[in-house]
Image (cartoon, rainbow, N blue to C red; front, side, top):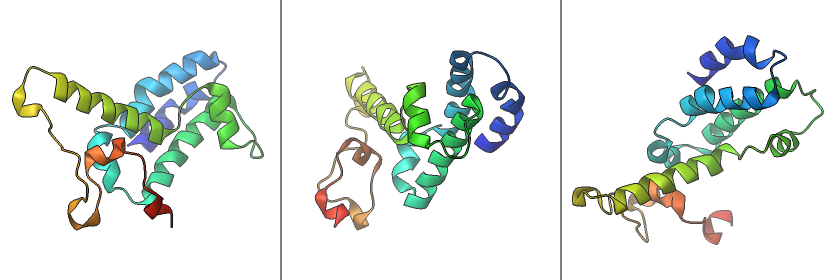
Length: 138
């Protein structure tokens, strides 16, 4: 879906519009499609799928600034002052869970509780909010 949105917006993103306008278009259309309900499904993605999502974001950034192949993706994102996709999804998840916990509906309080050991060793949506453990990196 994001690829189709990017293809339709290619003439606009590659045009001579101001970069701020292009970033706003990215945030309104492409980023929305990339992160739709991401706080629920992102923890279930494999590392390869996460890299593909990040690659979609990088392709759009390169299109926006017209960067050559030798410019690093991190440099482009830093210059555009746009956070990486994973940080954006974590922010969305934190906001959604905080809103549910603080809302007036008690049935939504503690909707996806944080667990010490997730069942069957896979991550749950609220696990996005906890920092990765050192055991995962070994």
